[in-house]
Length: 205
Image (cartoon, rainbow, N blue to C red; front, side, top):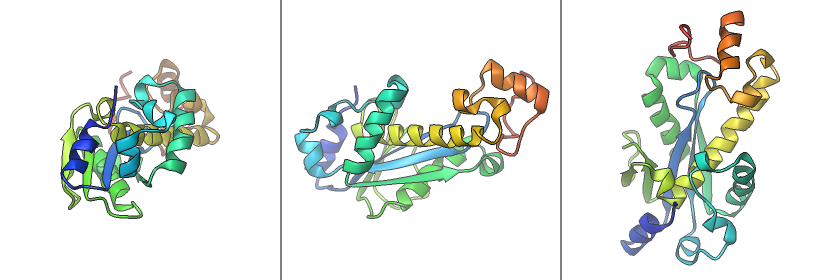
């Protein structure tokens, strides 16, 4: 389960504004990649008094209801928070790996106050000037990264549900743009729309 071990080590080394960064949407057939950067106050990291903080974990193992409840706490209680997006057109232009990094860099650069260290899930980011650490499986290890994964996931799910109101045939409210049977069948029948990533291999499904 995610905890604050990395963050406490960094606080001991003199860092006070530690941003956890993660993204979601890499494997989807359509829609944006969404990244979030989350900064907890040092007091929150060292004391962990709030019950909701102890429940933060990798967004993939939480239920939608758990994610949404934690999201409401995170966005109102943390010290700093920001989002970054990379569009389907950019994903097709740059490739999904580069687009994921761009979204994360945008999230970091949108923080209201500059961090002095960033913890990044699975990447070393070339587009930022801050001290950083790549944490493999970071959303299961660092609570700051896990919080970012929750914010990014809930935000992207909301975006896809709103887009479903325009392009309902693809059932994005249910599949969030991922490759379900119903989504592939809709692609075979109706073809892609402007939100689909045209470089992704959905044609042969």
